[in-house]
Length: 359
Image 1 (cartoon, rainbow, N blue to C red):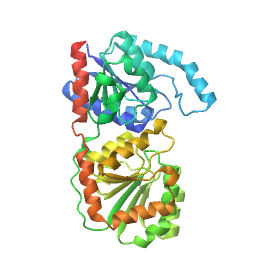
Image 2 (image 1 turned 120 degrees about the vertical axis):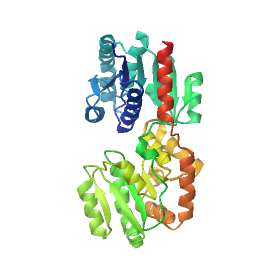
Image 3 (image 1 turned 45 degrees about the horizontal axis):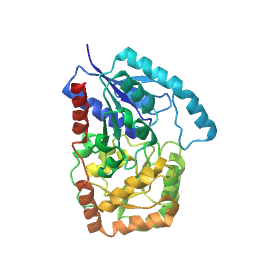
Image 4 (image 1 turned 60 degrees about the vertical axis):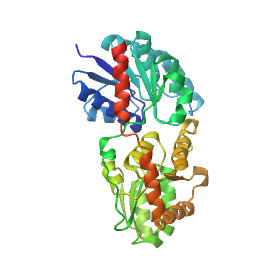
């Protein structure tokens, strides 16, 4: 009988792609494994996981942190039902292991699997652990963390592995300096309205660099039309798209990444050895995006502008500064590449299989 491994999805695209990287490596090693993702109807997993050819089961659970009182109460009321649904899934599939990818959807699934006796592992991709992973830590066997400084939150259970990324990012060759300076701007898979607004305000400064820079901007669906109009109104050329399907190729063409500082983005930046200008999302739980960005800044791989300090003029000045200092960009790329953990996927899968052998 095929052994089932649960992937408890986190709801964000980054968490799901981590799970997909682990799932593919598990199947490469043993095609008899059955990988089952467990998530929520509201999460991006409902779109991404079936498209990638994996099975998905749904539970009803919602977050408790950084939500209004009504949403928090609704989330509390859903907890017993989500735990019962998770127990039912455990009884149905008898998982040989369970991997929590972070986020509230992991909670009831990992708890149910652990109480069943299945070995459980958490993936913590951020510098500061999320609430769910902190709560689950006593119930799991190992925690794979992205940064050494995160080990202190989990004690002897922590193993510093890095964050899995798609092989295409790891395979990117260093980019030459021929031609215009290429800037890739994106705010996550759904875009960032705050970042879009400030980029458009920066266009009146960036237009002075016409001929020296080339802009590529992923806006998200909602902001696409007005952002495209802003570029046109300011007379700035750019590749403006609602969504970039081949992000690795876009990274490969870029001299500078301007983005938020989610865990998967940080991992992709370092895997590709890219210089970055990071604007952490101020609303991120426990300020984890700011902590992620600061990790790169301390290593010399990124410059950081906090949201409260962000404006079009500041953003334009930061980009212009790096356009005019190519040697600094080269040093940032070298620092970024030194932080990469190309064996992250292999290391985490080693942990999962090791726990399964001991069970």
